[in-house]
Image 1 (tube, rainbow, N blue to C red):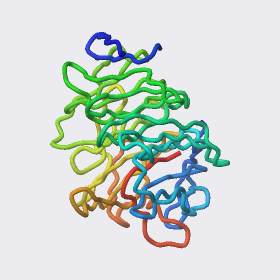
Image 2 (tube, one colour; image 1 turned 90 degrees about the vertical axis):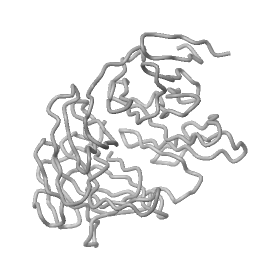
Image 3 (cartoon, rainbow, N blue to C red; image 1 turned 60 degrees about the horizontal axis):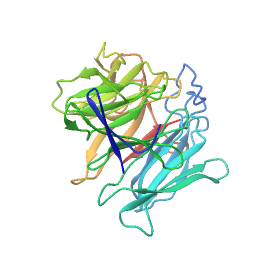
Image 4 (cartoon, one colour; image 1 turned 180 degrees about the vertical axis):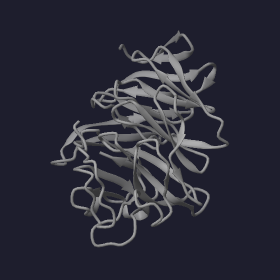
Length: 316
């Protein structure tokens, strides 16, 4: 039986007691199908092609994981060695199967059944140190923090009397950010309290991401991408175009931003966009095709148009 512990403004249901990435270089080389951004890999969803990967060293695009209607969420560890997937459980309609796989040899690091309840499909995230799993909020359980065997360490259900229902992302120090209304908050390491990072006045905003060095945050605000310091200061628009920019993701060394441009809705749920890279230096970049020479379109070797994505995008 779960015990209920109410600490400060966060509500907890306690079920148990308690990089090296890219190595980016400085000078981009646009228009060649490759870049000199270093040894990073970009992973992205594309329609029924499944998960693809783009090697920035070679400019080569390849399949990463085949398409599956049973896949609910996925993440790649910051050091590019593990992939975490959540899928429909084959034998239990109310559960998901979480699997952590070693990318190098395809061996299973951990696999467990997680009860999710009807329609509570989840997109779990690995912590930077690969010791914890952060599960975005579901209606019944709020935010979950699991160990690598699926043991529930905490359920964070509400904040300031309201259920948590927005985006959550890990910080490098194992705190995490969550959205509530028009604001972003940051927890402490014990998850006993949270502090306001920033309240926005955009009509719409979303998909905020954190730089791996923990100093900067990027988000979509209105139709464009904005950046700010992690303390909430220096909120600055960094993209412009006649269209909409989405899904900013920082490079492993925190020097660049991968962004989606020419965002195109296809139906009530579907959407897609092209991908480009800009420096994460708080300057503004026009991401219209062939307008701003500082913008690097993500063009695969042998192709002449920027890669398209339709879902989760990561840079590791």
